[in-house]
Image 1 (cartoon, rainbow, N blue to C red):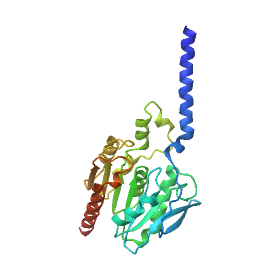
Image 2 (cartoon, rainbow, N blue to C red):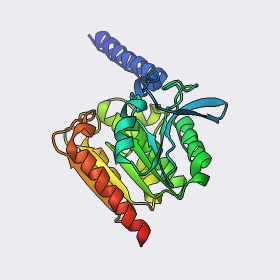
Image 3 (spheres, rainbow, N blue to C red):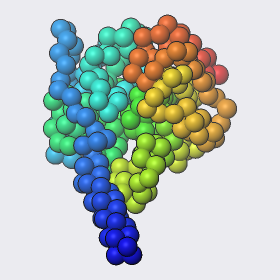
Image 4 (spheres, helix red, strand yellow):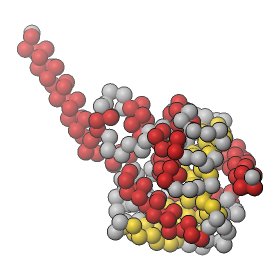
Length: 263
């Protein structure tokens, strides 16, 4: 009987260790879902070269003195949201980043690669503009926050944001040693105290991917009071942008940024 118990414990431990090892090897396939380039008539695309990678940027260069840099979710084709944002940010030039491996960009996505590419895009365009706004959705909120912690931005829009990937992964895999396994950590809660620009938080009331508490943890780490928080009633993680409340929040925040610049 004792031998059987020992054997069962050994089998359970071995299975657990093998599953942890599997997650460690496959974690980037779980975190990132590269999508192919979406096509839209009349949508210009520019190429940015960084660290031997060629990145496709969906761009609307309309001659304004404000630019918006947008970072999408982990399974998002950013081109599909280009039209809506071009309408909302109608007084800004737009730059939508296709991550490494996404939308025709070369390479494979990693945290450090995405961070580096975001900074490279900002540095490439900043000389043409008086101000830059950054926006990020889900995974992209972490990229946007890292950029804003390293560069001067006029404002930040964070849609369905999280405090850290370690915290989020621990929620979805509560019995896994996530802190030991995770390579790409996206410690947004560490970057946001370094950001001095106004911030708009957009939270989906019924977000099934990023629990509201994770967004609230991030909000609690802001080091100033120039924040706005909008909870989209009834919305889920993947459809909040279809609600009128989302567009109202964006327009109100842009008006607020205009007032800030006049002070």
